[in-house]
Image 1 (cartoon, rainbow, N blue to C red):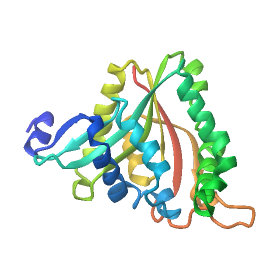
Image 2 (spheres, rainbow, N blue to C red; image 1 turned 135 degrees about the horizontal axis):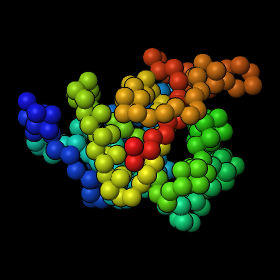
Image 3 (tube, rainbow, N blue to C red; image 1 turned 90 degrees about the vertical axis):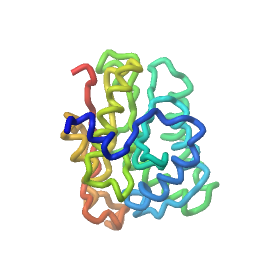
Length: 236
């Protein structure tokens, strides 16, 4: 059976996520992604308007792909966004999320103040998530920024995540991106990215991610041991 026929045989269709399926995407993430992802599981992330806003906005940008079965049910997705080097809105949003929000997160209550502090410390502080220096480094105008890669439990181990990533890269190139970047928080997604040629540039061991008292920030990472920032040039 030809590779391209595999998904037809399984009844899987791939498409850019339409904006009107945002709520379905969010429900899929809460049911399949946040429960297993080591950071959100450790921090007990539940449905909240900020999470809905951050993830839901990426449905509208036309750079995210979903896999659906014959009934139209979402079986997997890859959320991503195209960031343009001249987008002041994207720069302001990143600046707000990385520097302003952590300082005022106390207004959201103790739980979310702590969640935002820990995530910001890991992503912005240790992994240097800041995407803006990459435009000069790679001499490009657009970067495909990964938000998440997730598949349903029933489709795990069938190669769906790898195919979603491959198609996302193709779409990214069509949208003018020369580089893509991702922070992989789990063991299995990390394997997929490495197989696709992504290069590790920063890594944090969860066992070393501790507060000033020596307590682990993330206590339910299970088999996942590292959080890694990867980069791949799409014109290779």
